[in-house]
Length: 83
Length: 83
Length: 158
Length: 158
Image 1: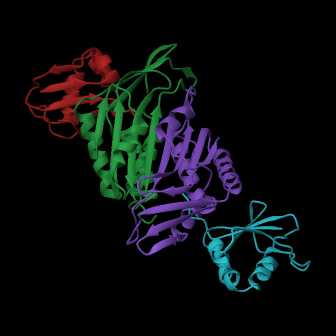
Image 2: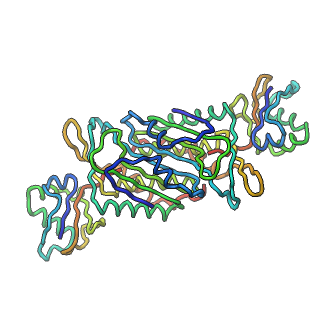
Image 3: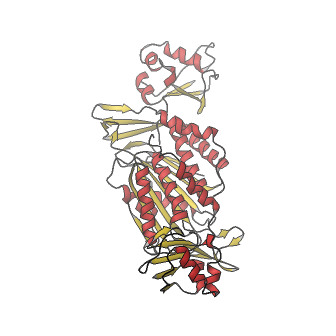
């Protein structure tokens, strides 16, 4: 599973992209965010307030109960501020 | 008093502009339109339906009861269709 | 604030850029360009001639523009309207509004177009296969303009 | 329909002209240009860097554009959004809509800007005297976008 981080989420976790292999019980987006936050440090800090984290799976916006699978591209980012 | 005609009003009356000297009892825009219509022909035809005639006195929109005076520039035209 | 009534064409991009040049408080520019269509209802239009009332037309446009500035927080605005003979595809009118707030730019541009359509002394004569036809004023334009009478002041919040 | 996400500047006038070239059914073109402001609240902005999500950003813009075409009778539309480093006064975004009806052009352009602000994956980092600051999403943008959810279909009458 590929994880992408953008904007201040990227700065807090210290990486733009990583490959992860979460355990089988990580079935949903919420599971994944919890699992990433358990790493502590910048990850815990970046994911502390879930209301500020938007998630896209395979480049489509999803909710926290959306499933995640091995080959997914999961992107985590703050609310958008373009235009 | 100077009278200007625009668009199909101009075509119907056959002139773009004329100087007129109406009698003293022509005190308002409505009086003036009635007096011009009495000329008959294209004037009567052009002014037959007052709902289609817009009036400006000295380049400002006015209603039928607005006064008219000797040195006024009075313009008669159909509803506008710019833009 | 500027109003130009002219026979010549104009360059929308150049006008938009010039209007806000050097003013870095502007966050949004809204522009509307009206073009000559080749059909009016079922009738083919081969050309159009726009008549105006020199003097009053400029005054009315300036009056409408001043109202927009009273109503919305605008940094700049521009109205250009052509007269004379125009062909299908030709530009007729340009309205540009610039503001720090995008809603103000959008709303004031729409307001200016709506009021221009119902208040500015211009008349269109369309050349059709059946001959020259003066365009009738449309109720939908009156309706579009009327909504600004009762509307609350422009949204300054975004 | 076209979407471009690019580092380079664009020419609004040239884009507007190209979008409707040869289509004489178009009566109105609405364009919105977003510019970098030199102030954000009380903070002076010396520059801004726009980050995006290559791939998803284009997809979201295309999705929003397709919605506008479903909702309004549009002849053509264009969205250009820049990324990378920009200075005050620089152009950020261009949205252009063309229709036979002016209300459709205005409303769809506003709809595209509102949705782009809340849905398109872009993030702004502003350089201020206090250092780089990620711009917070604004409630007023959510409100502006939300009004299109309940609104009836675009007015096709004018």
